[in-house]
Length: 106
Image 1: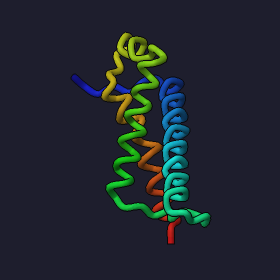
Image 2: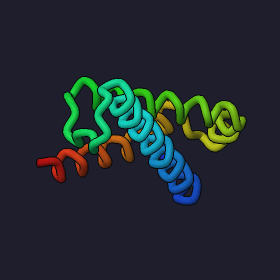
Image 3: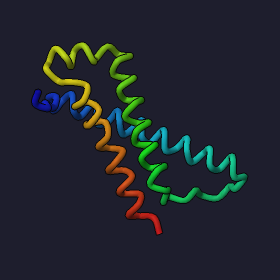
Image 4: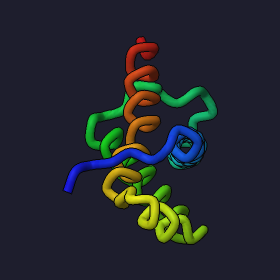
């Protein structure tokens, strides 16, 4: 079965939702690091690759949960878009955001 992407309107909505969820997950991680470390300075932007992968995987999982919670999975299936495409589309903002932060980190 070929991988089909949703229409541009739906894809933009999914990308924005994934970016917001990624920013929330990344912010929660930074807050947890600050609270657990007891340091009130800025957290390091550069994380180990395993943490980056875990944050991206958590973002994809949360986006898929949100799609199913809003009953959009049925709509997307009727439009011929499998959840695999939604998962790949949800991973894009997490990977791009991680790459940008890694490039900006000293």
